[in-house]
Image (cartoon, rainbow, N blue to C red; front, side, top):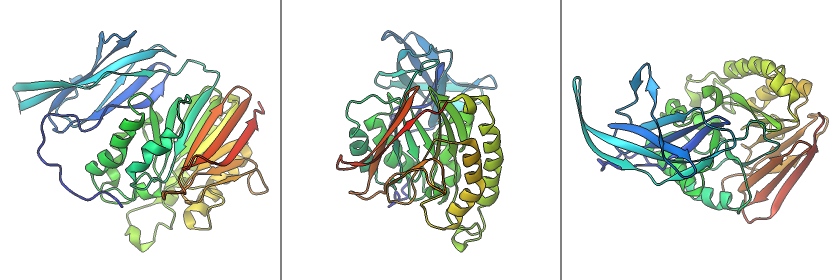
Length: 376
């Protein structure tokens, strides 16, 4: 169901996406957006108490980013736990000569708000979606099941697409529906699934996100939870003919395993009240394909030794909640698939003493839940 490969027609000077929030920290927030033409000078106006009295643009080696279609500006030096108003601005460059720039009209977005995380928050809550598979109409209803309950951010746990075709697919099937749902005011974090490693536009997908550590696997702490995010790669052997010799996920997973050993030895991991892993392919309850078994061999022993509390995955298109057992001493939660009736929204909230997870089916009924008391 991936988007059809159609070129972007010549357009007016307009935004092609709403601004969306990335990489939240107590003192910073990244704002990204897209415009119809690759010929703009862009900035963000922002401030507290409803004011827009500060301006930020992005510098690279002394140069202001310009003549771009995909825009990314990080607001730095923000106050923790503070609400900011913001809007994005884009000025057309109608002629870009070596010694002469000619500017056109400036367009501006609506004004939105975001709130930075507190410096040491006592709790954190997040929503998880997985395996949307190029069904943009699913985002609004699934996120809407949260109703008016507070959440700090949205986590996209892989396979938002069937494969990567072009930029328009990313706009139409992800950024636009997310912008309509929540991502102008709530940040989202993205990790790719195995389907996002496919297609001729696969190498460009990372450009549309700004994750912690600025790569596809990373760690971060939010309140009582330390999050470890792994990029599980493909589900079949690297030499499978359809991959045509252009993947090496075995080495990539080995690389992540070495990194994971350092993560679980870190003070941030050890002192966290809860240790949560987010990754697309679960290493148990996911059959016996190569990707599952390789994740099991390389990540599983580290998870056990480090005593993680919870792993949240997708991939199987069959939702399930698996209590600690002989194979794994921690809960494993697997979200549902893309078809109506099998879609899920996972809601998680952690305090200093307790982590509670509920998985809802797309009819609003409960598919499973987990309650964990802190051990630290």
